Length: 345
Ligand SMILES: Cc1ncc(COP(=O)(O)O)c(C=O)c1O
Image (tube, rainbow, N blue to C red; front, side):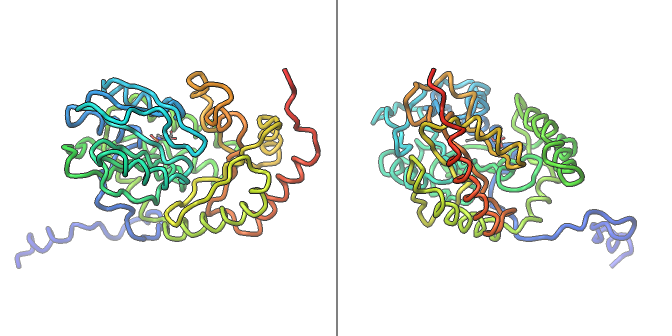
């Protein structure tokens, strides 16, 4: 072997200063097409196969609807019933029509399975942004958003059937470095101080053409022990359910395939916004899914209840069972005080 060939084989950089010491686990969905966000993966899918119309739930964040608008496709919306199953979809779809269903909170695999019995695989796009561990099951496209499950700046993954004619994006996203800011501020200061940077990072994903996931995000994804993430979430959900199921207006019954994003506690007669503010003042932060959807929703529906009357409690891998127990007890104690009754208008 000549010296030149020998040196050429040494592509890996060694020596010099140290980089971050990140562990290396298995890649998450190595066969997926890697995008800079879930919304861009959705946009890319809707641009394929000459699709003409997508049926979207009204109960979804604006970013998903905007992804469809960016793809330049017609949009019709549908409602969901109390089991979060679509209630007013047509039985027969025309050529070029597809349905996008969100596996809400990682708790709706049974709904996905029902839809798969009713429609052809090529007619279904499953948005698993809330359900990172839910299977792909051969539908036209399944989209994941790992940053909702662990500390990552961005990223979207697409698994698809051979029926989807799509090519991987060739231009790499350059924004991850700046989007790291909120993760670093949380690590070095606090979640509260990093929140503005989190919002900026999220907003920076808007209105971008579908780009390839950055090498930074790809590397960070491999540094996470996803099987541990998975088992913590299941255990924590089961534990908090023991405390809060008796007061929950929805009885969540996760199947073996459901790995939840959070524990949605649907409350009636409670001023949930006030409870959220109280919790936040005590450093317990809860998401809201989705205030931007409200103008599309009818009052008195499950969708409105999920938006306005639901506490989405954390059950993620940062919490051990003792912390989950104290969170469950804290919520029960807060609700018992009677200070959070909904004011009649
Ligand atoms: C159901 C759902 N799908 C898709 C998205 C978009 O995910 P991303 O921020 O990775 O684009 C979100 C969140 O914003 C979401 O809640």
